[in-house]
Amino acid sequence: MDKLSDSQTPFTAKWLGYAGALPFLGLSAALFGTGDGISDIFLPSQISFALLSYGAIILSFLGGLHWGRAVTCPEDRLILSARMALIWSVSLSLTGWFALFLPLFWAAALLLAGFAAALTADLIWLKKGYWPYWMRGLRVQLSYVAMASMAVLAYQAIS
Image (cartoon, rainbow, N blue to C red; front, side, top):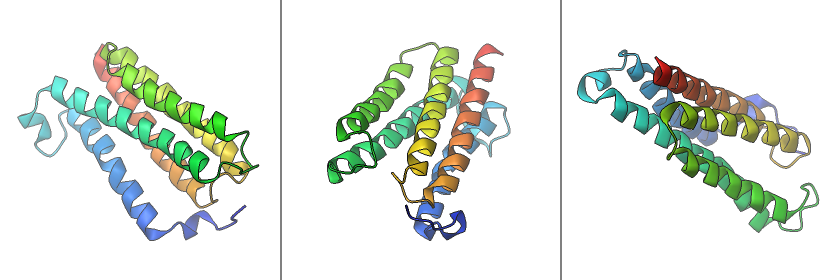
């Protein structure tokens, strides 16, 4: 297991990871009319759909991490099996896609649960050395942003 500390996360990974959090943060703020003019230009339903679809895309991306690992390291004994990683990978993508067909509250709740499940699984696999240690801090922080954004979306759907 790579024992680099979280502070040794590669700069590019940090920069791209945090940049990827901006749509979650900006769209969540726009739902409450506090975006930088976004809420003046777009309807709340458009902002909600943009946030929901971004969440679905990012959940699919998280699944893609496992697909990539499984196909590049099929004999890796650190994971249960490449087959399990492939199944997990596709389940996250399908969950995100399926959420797009649900009423807004349930869609946001499903994505929130998907992000929580993905984080839980990745923390287990990080502990087993499936990913480099530096990913831990980034995964936790970015997952919390995604989950909080889905909670904001769910709240907005019932308000």
